[in-house]
Image (tube, rainbow, N blue to C red; front, side, top):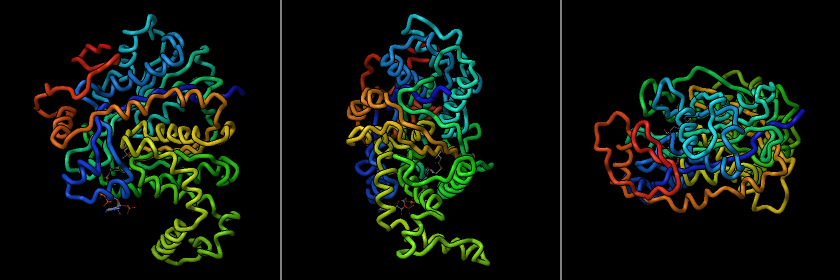
Length: 440
Ligand code: HMG
């Protein structure tokens, strides 16, 4: 069967940044280490006043198309994954296609366009749809363009304010892909939850602490489901494990949970048994609370072991590099985690071709999905071709009062003067110039 997967990537970060330890923490009266060590974030990206989810998505897609030398006719499907859409009818993919048609000779008249929604999970679901479309043979030799794009803003003063971010990732899904091949097997954990939602509102209503527990519960279910459709998962099977990263501290918790799950009844658990004992088994407890307490104690021990630290530092920590500098990009978060991992692989002295990634996506509401990806032999050129370091370095560093203005400008319902000066100068990129006009 021909391999199907991710052939190319384009990234666009919002052009402003907020320094969390330097600007946010003093304003909130907090210890800067709450952000750098606790949440694991250094900076958040924000859109300049002329940027939004359309311009960021179109700019990411144009970078990808130019690098790959693509024309619109090469693309038979455009799906946008977002939870920041401003239009309840017309999909964001049509706006992005409209931008791209201004700068290429051809058009997307015969491409199927849509919009995917399931909170942060939607980018992975859109990739899934593209995979199925290609596998079903309905693509007529054309590739799918998936664009995940969000302005992840919270109401001012919400605890989530520290985890904001803005950016887009474009991904080309095709046969014989250069970066990774997608596996057929998937695991799901899904339940109706209301810890993070936006019913007809721009900013989420969030129960932050509960959202962390819901993330972990759905992830555990997805792992169990994934194991039921694959052979047993072994720790050595995976070079990296990119997780959905609302903030790196969340991944620290999820990685520990995944590790405990995977080592159950394996030689790793045997190796650790002398040091920290075996994992408590629910059947040995009459009372659920006592069992949960025993698990908590076991996890606290587990995370201090050398085996766990080594695995975490090699397989998980390298996936967090971009997230630490940009914050939560919602639908793009797991996709920049994958890119972070491969950027780390570029610095190592081995090929990684044929190695496997364990990709764990999550969206509030709530659903987790787990699948594996196999690294392909064109990956280095694709990852080396990204200019994300330049983009990050050229972001404008906001003062606190500038941050307040920018937050207001991007709040749809506020009656504020939106005519504040831009902080950066656009250069060869799509900008928002008013409804119906999107110029490069
Ligand atoms: P908070 O209550 O302000 O922070 O908000 P905290 O007091 O829980 O502290 C955070 C961490 O920093 C803790 O670490 C502290 O101990 C530590 P932990 O104990 O959890 O490991 N800390 C320090 N560390 C070092 N030095 C210090 C210090 N002080 C504290 N001085 C919260 C945290 C997550 C609740 C908040 O940021 C929030 O509400 N975020 C938004 C919701 C969110 O991101 N949830 C994540 C799971 S849901 C998800 O991922 C889906 C999502 O992406 C949306 C979607 O799917 O569409 C959000």
